[in-house]
Length: 348
Image (tube, rainbow, N blue to C red; front, side, top):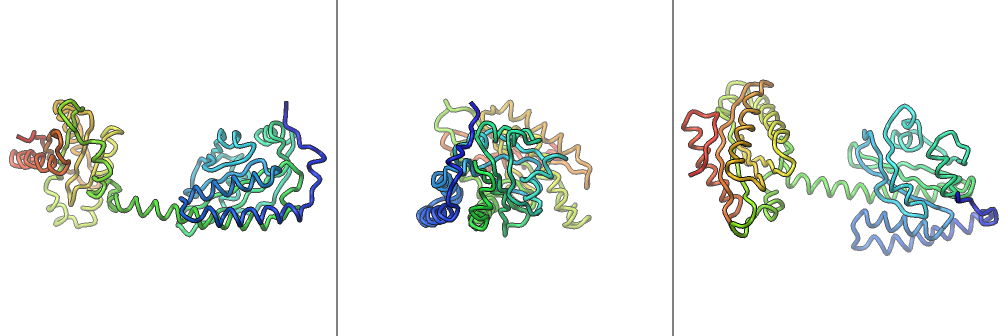
């Protein structure tokens, strides 16, 4: 049966409702902020909000790059949580003027009523199945460049948010702004610590994260291949064409390597013009085939300049660290250089 608002239930004291919500949110925020992860704080507050006022049947948030083409609720709570769990809002001529993308794009929007007879299908569904009558969409601003978000609330009473006062919910959106910005900044710092700024690839510091998934306890564990790659004559490129062009060559090579390897492989900028590729569940024979594929992909680059690569390959031995396997692969790399470059050599 379609959910319908209870007419008697809709008669309420807006001032009392506002005071009750404010009191609950303040106490919840004080309790949740201490020692909780950022998204746990937002989830806890949304949950407290929808529990305190059953008239608010759904509250959800999304936070991320402002240029996104797709929004899916990341945090949600309330009686209509199933709706948020299953919706995807893709930017289109229709949705870009809807409340979510309009708010994300910085357009002011008032709370509005919906009904089972609304023109927009999802609103009809909300009204018919969950008894929603009033919607409020608020911006979640960010100090983090290029990021923003939305905080969307749904109530079962016409004009609910204007009656209670949108200022209370705007203050909550401001709190979410600070919390989610802190989360994004922390994630970016962690990302920067383990990624190379020039190429976007993993750096040496990331070995601590990926090594536990690759280490072999015994010969019975799946094989792992380690490839060490070095761009040929890279110093000549820097000397003759300049370091800016050299950086562009490194970026082009990095993109090519990342695009050519499998999803489960790890590409690391090892240093300078050297790259390390760790390939789980890969025998030496398969590793040689993969290395040749990478060599050919780099040799096909022409923008900004043609470049080739020499590759050494080694198998990760049981109980061996990746860095030691890379040292062995380096022997194969030196052999490839000595043999004329632009080739693959197996470590002895």
